[in-house]
Image 1 (cartoon, rainbow, N blue to C red):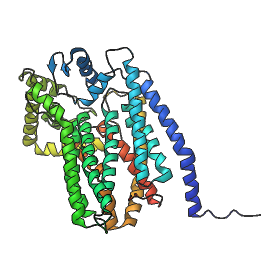
Image 2: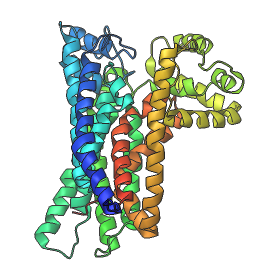
Image 3: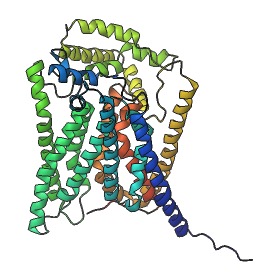
Length: 463
């Protein structure tokens, strides 16, 4: 009786690779597309307007004013309402047109993630991150709402893709190489940096919290160049070009934001760069009632009725001036922080935890068992992947060594800066799991890259 030969690690890896690439990833892509179509065109999609984006878009179409009636506003960022206005919310079939738009944005996000996966050296495994992006519970849930997350996720990966291209083609070029290559890299720095800045500006005009991404990313580039200098390239030359790229990105970002700022100067009398909504979200996250709830509250959901009544009375004193209300909210929040620093510190911990929580937050104290089960399944999905990625990261980083870790960290700087920016912003401002939705495509890309790298199946491309 013959015995089967033992399965070697190489054979096992080849079998797993074949299963993932030929079976699981294609099935995930098909399932993801079907899921996104079901979300976009299913019953209840694009019915509610929780943040009033459609209201502003309809007013822009019917009254010609970005606001409410004849009163202009900067309470909401402009990009998503402009997209809705282009889809004509006042015509029949708006929900169908918006569903098609969100579906295209979702598929476009997955396609860009595939491109980035190829650049990160995933090779044939580059089909895995797009599949995970399409089936991601957060992204899928938000794709059926009149909210900014779907557009923001697309803009984030588009910005990272262009930024990554400029970094590789513009900064990682030796001044000792051919003169034509060096001149080309300088043109890439100028034009590519400006394009990156414009994309960053569009991302900020979709969600103002990304303003911090631009600041962290631009300021961090020279540090990136100094710590990650290529052995064949003078560190000073690379640092100088990184500073030039930072300047080009800053110029592009300023140009992209300038129409919105100029409009706010003309219509509101103030150079509002983001929105006049930030003060409210800062005060919502930092007020005595919320601090007291975190200390004493027994309900799983905070009842903000008392806070909202207080804020409504305070806002009326500004007589419709939303810039005044925004300033007043920031001032009230700062008073709450000053009066209760311990409460503020604990609230920061809670907000950071909510931002990165694998468990979707409860919407009601009287939650149905069906929703509880769904929330539990989503949490299990994220926790399971988190454990796999953590084990892969420990194995990969231990094999790279100290200098290699820095090289890898700095190579991924644009995406890392985005994660740092949103984490910091939502540690201070109001936060829940939904706020990290725009980060999910990059997080899935990194997850697959870490897992594949831990078994030696990928490495970041240098060219």
